[in-house]
Image: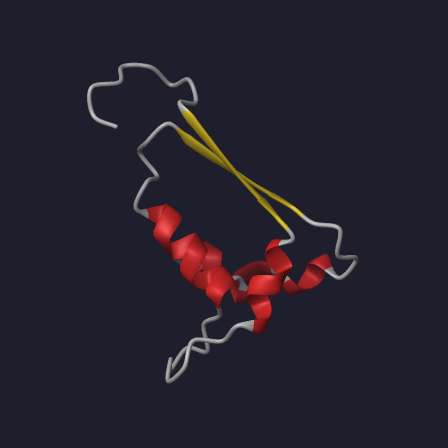
Length: 77
């Protein structure tokens, strides 16, 4: 998205029921990543781009997606 001189969001991505990605483990990954981890890592490539990502969940066990403090892989990425 080169050439944009604004901080306004140019692209919004919406994911519903993203918790389903937690059940899909990456085979032979030494860190035990799942598909949700991979999705978050992919979005890191766009941190400087005007992209906004929303995850909406109807799952009541949201603690699976947001572990506390240093345990969060997305915080270390």
